[in-house]
Length: 132
Image (cartoon, rainbow, N blue to C red):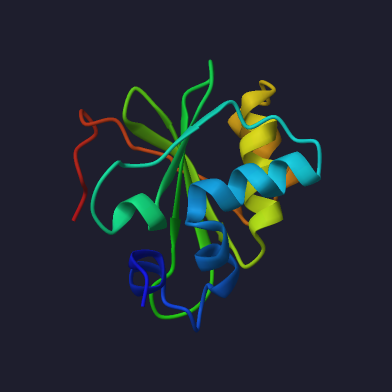
């Protein structure tokens, strides 16, 4: 069994095993649908080199990962390390479309309106005392 098939699980992600991991599968999906994802990277070592991808743009970073118990793809949109929006979908193309829209400059509000599976992460100011 290859490193990719061990890390990804042939049962859930046979297509990703065939392509050598999540990052190459995202790149191929984007190319097939003429989407610009920006610069795509994956960790160089360990299991995560097959199961994680980061898509870098002027907007920030889109971090993509995999579900471990069921087949789905998770995406976080981050600026300076802070998650501004997140979502998950069963179709890798939908994740690539979100990343391409982020790369193209859409705002978080525009992204969550266009992609219903995306959710804006709202944070309360630390100075607001909790009423209990």
